[in-house]
Image (cartoon, rainbow, N blue to C red; front, top):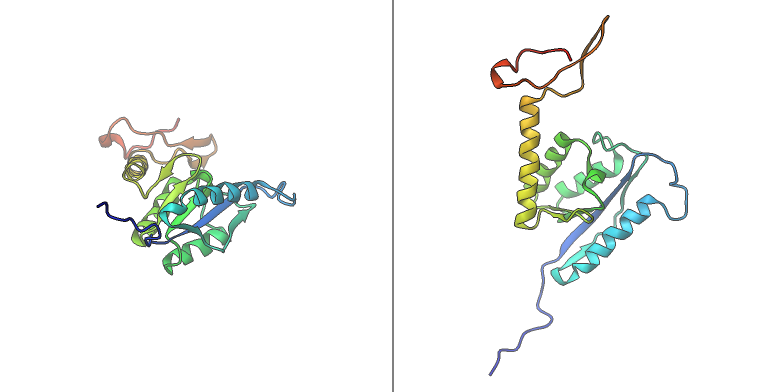
Length: 183
């Protein structure tokens, strides 16, 4: 006799928050805009994972007209507070750069996510930290980011002088890294 499977077996619920962002306010007044398209894509992805217990939280985290270059965004701050309060299990974005364009900020967010057991999914880039491959990709990205902070001193203007702007370029080895060479 074959064992009977319970079709209604309890699957743990995964509360998913969709985060959307658009750098400019251009087009946000349209009936269906970029934020709506990003949200729709996230909702469809979550729906495809209902067999795994995924559900969309009712709160919307939409930052229209905000840069991804920093974390000074109201919806992002609400999302981070909800993560810290234990109200979110997974963050879903359309693309990784919707969450952040700063590797340092991204790393900081991933630390908070990990601390609170929150996974991260990019719908269009097959990036999911709930899987071992997704965690591997994240670790590779963050290790390159850590390496960049150690060996590359920014690539941004280091100082301005009468002769123009000087940029710091990467040193050829760690022994000369302390010497700043103008480009």
